[in-house]
Length: 189
Image 1 (tube, rainbow, N blue to C red):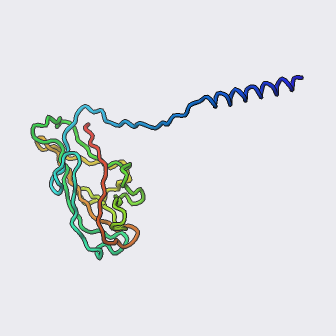
Image 2 (image 1 turned 45 degrees about the vertical axis):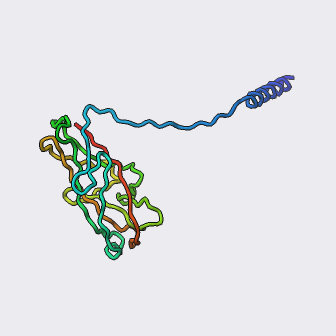
Image 3 (image 1 turned 90 degrees about the vertical axis):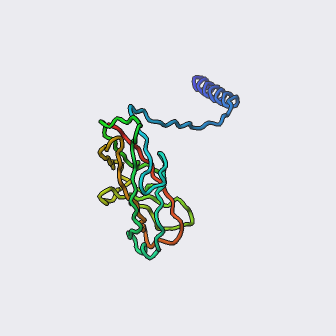
């Protein structure tokens, strides 16, 4: 008799489960992402010499190079220096703080193996990445999130110098266009 009561209880529970599922409504859902930064000091950032001079987002246009300059894996060519300018006249920047700039390793175009930037244009130049260098021409490994560069303030402005160059990755580069990007942040301490 106890087995019959247990079986009846299980059947009743399963029936209630199916009944509640039959009455359930289905809704589509998703994710909303919010991002931002809280800071006690913000100074404008813009591209300086070697860039288009844009504010916050700017372009460094590398000169064209021949594929023969990038004929072997690891070959580099077309180095171009550029400056990032923090602050400026009448911006109210607190020049007693150190402004440090870093490239984010989580940037979508960062190649985790080589620390360079991959080409975002499908069907264009292959085996061609962009490599960044610091002011001393040392290679910046963008996959290493600890990279951070600063410059002394001169008046109301701090200028950080970098360079960019093509780098053949995985073999000889092929002809075509190259476009890539990297996300950066500036911290004031």
